[in-house]
Length: 358
Image 1: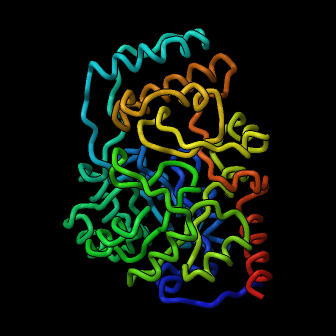
Image 2: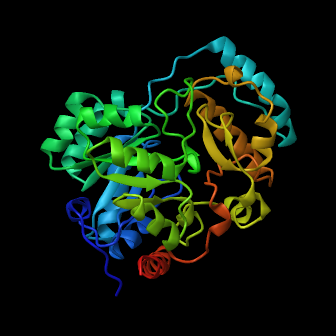
Image 3: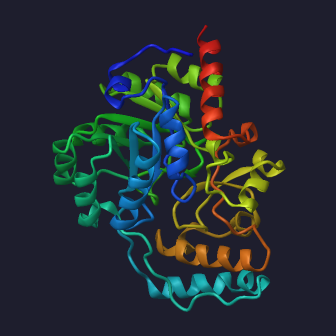
């Protein structure tokens, strides 16, 4: 069995391998998270698209499969500002794409996700359920939320894309930082999606955070195998977080169209897009990203209002046998994805990491 050096963070998390499965909303499942935790890593669930009762249910599904540690991830974005004129214009722009599927666009758009900043039911549920870890994406929680979670004995992680964001998180009292590089799949964790994005890569950002801050750093973005994990550790990271590596596993909730795209030439052409959800996110190249390539960013409504239209278009496309409108989030390491169970992948990763560390 592979063994790795311990650290205060790994001991605190209760894991033996410095591997965290990314909390991919809509893709990570209780079975995936359980397999990762049962094989010595930290399994994660993304509940940003759920309400408190739905999140409680998946936490309990995980616990039926594993006694290991669990990371529950929430979205800490600024609530959307509705703009009916902008949203109507957006639906008009999408009309031709809906017509390709034989469907009509929605008549109105809604804010489909509640930010954790405004979700006291989610906070109360987490305090009651007490997962080992809660992690934050898109920003800094309220001080009272951090205090309540810490009082419940929960370890807090948060993603940062710059040193400045990391400094805000350290001052707020989180326990460790996830250094999300520009290579990463899915939504950019950038706090202000309308601000300037320095687009720091994973390894540059990891090194900057290790040198500038006191908190443990978890490297995330483009890491797909044991060699990548070892490289992150050698740069000072305490662990690595892998998302795209788990999209093709048996336990993933990715649908057949997503899997087919992942294991196609499209994996070599990921792109950052805003048109699917309203926030910058890295996706496999598909019909939606190609349509959005020339769309001005200021034409896109706020997140997650835009996502209401994106999900409707994806549903219409799937009903018509077209899979090119999905949120096919994937990082730049996508061509390295492997199809196997999450448990087998964990064993493979640990073996590769052990060899890479010598």
